Length: 118
Image 1 (cartoon, rainbow, N blue to C red):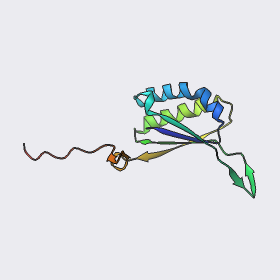
Image 2 (image 1 turned 90 degrees about the vertical axis):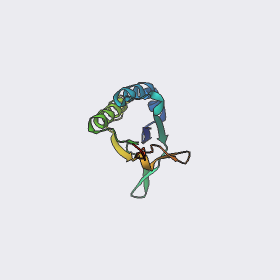
Image 3 (image 1 turned 60 degrees about the vertical axis):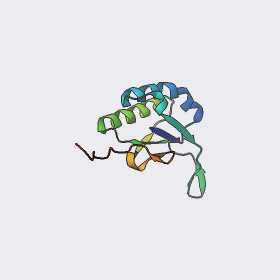
Image 4 (image 1 turned 90 degrees about the horizontal axis):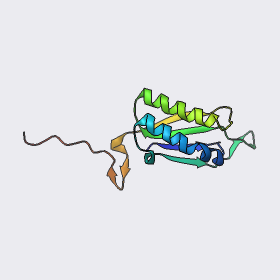
């Protein structure tokens, strides 16, 4: 976590920028590089009865890290992808709540119960 899902972007181009992108994102988010995943989806977009090129779009699924970090992540993703030669890209964030995210059947973050005794 964070999980980046990309569509409309050439996989080989993403591979070229992936190392530098993840290194920058790890610095912005103050976490290790192995927390990130990048998935490139092959998507067929349809308009007016015909297949058309898919618009470059990145969805970031993560736990909220505040507006400043979010702005930094969006900027880094955009800048790295523009370096591949695509003319524009959109980035959207899907925010998970820690108590609604499970790993192996357990909530990712369980809030501490109040103590029974002082």
